Image (cartoon, rainbow, N blue to C red; front, side):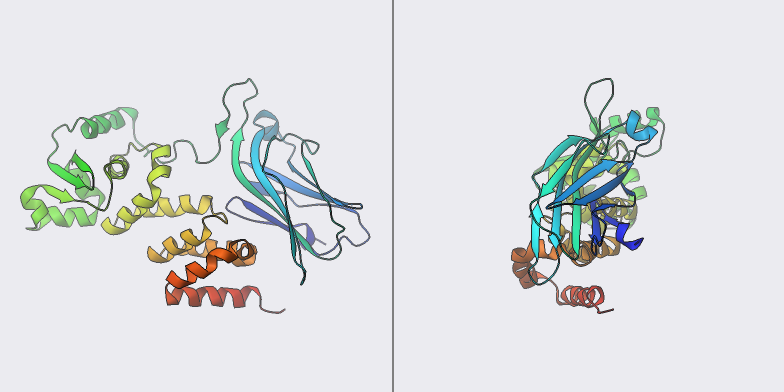
Length: 327
């Protein structure tokens, strides 16, 4: 029975597999962690199924109650597979009585309950604006004193003693060779050897827009804001791969892992393959096959397979064989 109460999680998705109710008409899951809270699911069978989602009663959930935007799905296993999806919910969840969902169906045998968190915020007890849990507030700012960060910000924004010009697809920026070279082995090689960039003090980055290149420089100068990182993270990933900025590449991979969903999983899988992001690739595979979300992207799969690399398709096939291997 222990395995019947375990909830598996990946990214913002939690999945509870129930083989059967047996003689029991009520089930409560083990706790699972999404965001900063532990959560529970419960299922009660009468004529229909009644599903609840609620946070663990604790000091944290009392002082920092979650404001959650989420969607629930119930999938009935077997040849006549059926999926029931709730409307998108946005609820302040404090207790087990704050939210419940009736599924109009008589359940027999195995079924799966999914909850996908679209957003999570901390609701302040004294009023005011709710604070987002994702992205982590300030996590992209380097650990440095505020005075140093202010100086670096001024150096970049006011081009103080700048000595290199960067040409983007829609404009130019001024920067500093020392900071670029210290951040990237590719930039260091440009200025060390007798290359065009060293001679002209100009770097062409025409595969980035002015705005996304500014986000790249802000990262290198340690002054990037979290919202700018999220807005430009795909462009930053490409730049990190091109210029050998390993810590930025890792940060982009971790960020892309945080919000895998049915609407972006195939795009993420392609990016993971292109940039050799093994953790992201594995996460997408698990999302699609172990969590069964491949059924949600059936229509998109044909177009994906027409464009996907042959070796990637082979890995996907091997993953299917592993997941669906008979016991």
